[in-house]
Amino acid sequence: MKKIYSSIMVAALFASAVSCTSGNSSSADCTQTAKEQACPNDGIPEGGEWITMFDGKTFDGWRGYCRKDVPKGWVVEDGVITYKGSDSTVDPGGGDLIYDKKFKNFAFEIEWKIDKAGNSGIFYTAQEIEGMPIYYSSPEYQLLDNENMPDAWEGCDGNRQAGAVYDMIMPDPQPVKPYGNWNKTRIVVYNERAIHYMNDVKILEFQFGTPVWRALVDHSKFSKFSNSPEKCPEAYELMLQCGKKPGYIGLQDHGYGVCFRNIRIKEL
Image 1 (cartoon, one colour):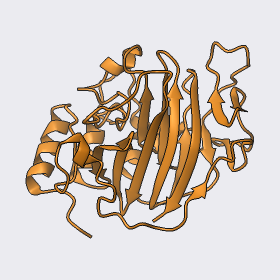
Image 2 (cartoon, one colour):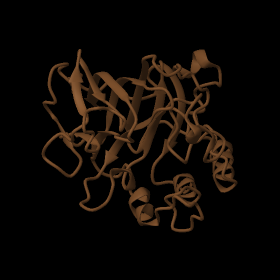
Image 3 (cartoon, helix red, strand yellow):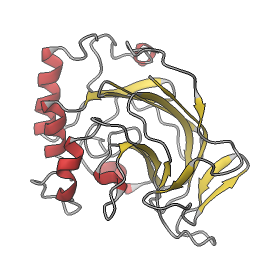
Image 4 (cartoon, rainbow, N blue to C red):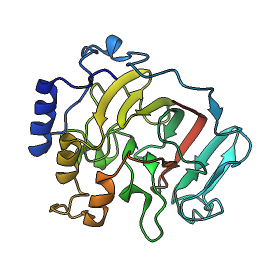
């Protein structure tokens, strides 16, 4: 497998994590221009056939996190999985969705559309642990209305904006479309290397299980050392283990309206 980081890039990302400035950790093979960041393969094998994860009509293959049914508030309408939001006339009930199969090395694609001031997320390599929320054991690809949701200005240097590894790594560049528009997300995980794309542009990359990953966790709200009012140190050891074994893909109920369509995955 090709080398992912140069020593200079590793040192730079480690330093940025320690200073609570989570910068881009892109491969040395990709320059910083938006055009070249699309890097269609990035040294990742093609893998098998695409698996359609949503048939456009039903929740077949999906269920709630730590439950067998689909939580209220999630509906299928016009070929789209929709969470209505907490202000809906539909009783939202609450609860994240997961696809009922675990994956370790994969390419995952999905399209999403967020409501005004909306906040949601995509979880991957998540573990199902009774009594603990899904985000304790999973990185989160943040879905956000950057213009109107106050959380966009929380955290450090944009690491809570759309496309970020929530509270850890900022997206760079930031090609998100405004609320009410469809965005395309691609997440690739291969040999504990993870890459985020948005609208066919590579926006960040990192490696699980490295000193850099530990530093990012150490300076996030998931750290046992955190001073954040949102701190959840119970997640610390679980976050350090992310990516080491197969896990679930999840869609977040954060109480805001969000839509998903064209969901597929292939194992690498």
